[in-house]
Structures are given as C-alpha cells and as structure tokens.
Image (cartoon, chains in turn orange, brown):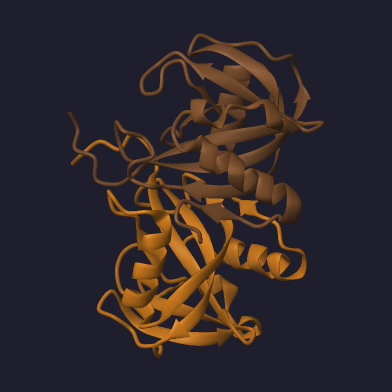
Length: 146
Length: 146
C-alpha cells in the first residue's frame, strides 16, 4: 500500500432547508450503518467546491448551491482507517429529489431535533453541534477550536 | 516519485494587527523571491490548526491565536508544481517579534495598501482580495466562489 504522507482531503455538505438537513446511511467502511453528512474524497485536479457539489448529487440526488464553509476538521482519529481532513460546506438545495445512490443505503431529510447524535459517523456529531452554533452566531470551526 | 492521488493539504495564515499583515519572502520553489502568507504543508497526524500555529511561528517568529477560517483554496493550478489545497486562517499575534527563518529570506509587517499584488506567490492576491471583503462583511471564500 502507498505510504500516506499528509492527511487526505475530503468534503462534507450540510444541505439545509426549513430547519431540516439531509443525512445518508453509510454502506461502506468505516461506520457502516451509521448516519453521516453526504461527502467524500476530493479527487486530484478537482476543487473542494466541485467535490462538494458532485458528492451531494451522487449521494442524495440533490443539486446544491454552496453558501458558506462551516469549518475544517482534521483530527487524526476522526476516521479510524486513515488521517483525513474534511472541509464542511453549508448549501441550499436548488433542484432534484432526495434518493440514495449505490454508496449509501438511505438519504433522508431530518429535523435537527430528531437526529440521534450517538448514531453519527466520524466526528459528524461535533460538526452538527458547531452547525447549531453557526445558525445562532455564524463563525467558522475546526476540530480543536476552544 | 510517489503518485499523487488527491490534492495535498496546506495552510496559510493572515496574521493581522492594526491594519497590517505579515508577509514572508520565499526562498524556495515555486515563486522564489515572491511575497507570500506564512504557511506550509499539513503533516500526517497533525491538525490544520496545529500546522497553522506551527508554521506561523517557524516562518515569522510570532506566536498566534487563530480566530477564523477565511476560506479554502484548491484550484489545481494554484501551485504549478503539484495540486495543493490550502486552508487560510486569520489570526492575532500574541507574542514574539517578526524575524525570518531559514525557509524564507524576509518576514515583515505590511500595510494592505502598500502590498504589490503582482508580486505575490500562488493565488495569494486572490486570497488577500477575499480578506479585504471579509474585513467589510465577513463570510467564507473559495477558489471558484462567484
């Protein structure tokens, strides 16, 4: 296997509408069966904003318009398989209807209050807590922010 | 050489005080002799926030406290040598005095209006234009933001 020398960049997107957000149920390792924000790896030659729009569509069927960056999360243990760094966007859905793709078994709108934070993959519980702060007072966030 | 499969993460930091920011003069490729924000690669096992504080100190002699993320810039051509993705922080200096380290030949405080934008490395001219918008109206930024 190729030796990893730097964290691998990924993106995740909070698609929000009327107080709800979209979560997907993961089919693959790690965190199979857990709920997560739609997201994935940033490919070589691709911008983070392109990756976010691409993965949102692939995993949820929604076309999105990115509004802001919530933060960048890069704790070495956030993914138990390899060190990843994720850029989290906040986006509006612009068209399409929620449907799951082959990488995820479910994609669904959730009221924030109905989300079981103990059932979230990676550090997405921390990310959604920061998102709730962002809704009140904006700002940007990262893994070790005090 | 190892084949690159994803963009390589880096960080850059805008250290601001009384309307001035710190720029360094680069000694190494690419952009030798050009001015740049202090920054560098994120190492495996390190968070972006740790890398930002570490590189700011190494390159400028200043201890900093990170305040916000300005944006994430990942255009594949922003660095002519390899595809990098940079997380740009805004920080306050907390102690230390500006001095250059071995990777840079100069580190200096600049008034924004005195910066020659044509003499900046990478996409740092775009980043500093976004920073001037941020000073007026906050928000977050990326390479392809309209």
